[in-house]
Length: 375
Ligand SMILES: Cc1cc2nc3c(=O)[nH]c(=O)nc-3n(C[C@H](O)[C@H](O)[C@H](O)COP(=O)(O)O)c2cc1C
Image 1 (cartoon, rainbow, N blue to C red):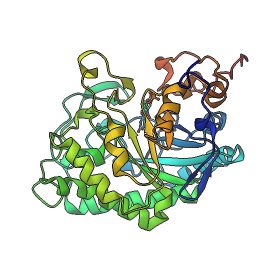
Image 2: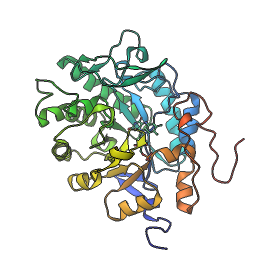
Image 3: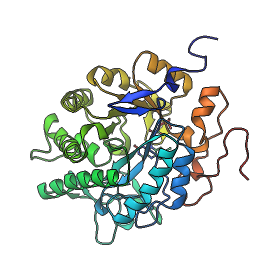
Image 4: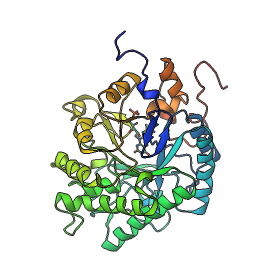
């Protein structure tokens, strides 16, 4: 058996993330599961779900709305009301009891929204009044994305403040930190990219102007809760939700260069072989750039990589060392004991995409650990 095929060891060794000890280098990737009430309160089963998966050294919880204006998907949680804080506190307590760390992913969807999925009176905001070219999810199914309203400078300032307040609220709930969701074509990515940002002011045009919103969100969150509590996620060359740029390599080089003045908890990147929640196929999968090779030399602090990893590939990337921590998404859904299965070389339960965005316990907290049945 070659070293690459053998049961990994580095993956299960502890890691010091800016002074925070992680019991292993396995990260649970953020995944929207739509198990909150319509006003964004995580249901009690959310605590069970994350508690079951606390074998991970670090859990990054699902995209969580920073404000009513930031919401785009039905039954997704929030972190801007007292009721949200109380419910998340219950989740975090269970995760901490199992000696895992918990970061909340801060989400503003920008133009990937429909008024039917938002609070009454809200309309999608985005860098520019340019609609996403495809359908978006609503409570009554898919509908064409409406044209968003272009954000004013006051809207931008308010939104940055909303990120900082959400970060404070997350810490109030006991979270170890927050991850700014700048991936997958949502609001921060909409500012970064040429296909969604046509502004003529300080937030658009040149590459440095397109970076400005993301940098200001990072600065505000760092000022609110400290750099070692703030991570950020990017999907370079991902193209998901209609966000891409001709100068994408230069854009991320400049962005990471600027961000490296902050000793953030981590930067988290997903390989370009992934589009949102799927592995790219066919023509989309050809000529995929090596995102980890692009970012690693640019980022002197903790780097998390994700996207289609298994235990063997994770060990290889940690060995290189192309990364410090590895995120696993889809396999964590049907394998609450994923860490133990990988550590022991046990087989994994199959993925069941039909239950990913349901609203109850089925397909959520009823996956048994290896060798047991729960029903
Ligand atoms: C059901 C589901 C929901 C997801 N929701 C989010 C999300 O809220 N935020 C995010 O950054 N990525 C989200 N993703 C992407 C995952 O974090 C991850 O990048 C992707 O699944 C690829 O990793 P994997 O191959 O280990 O599954 C989601 C993926 C799935 C399958």
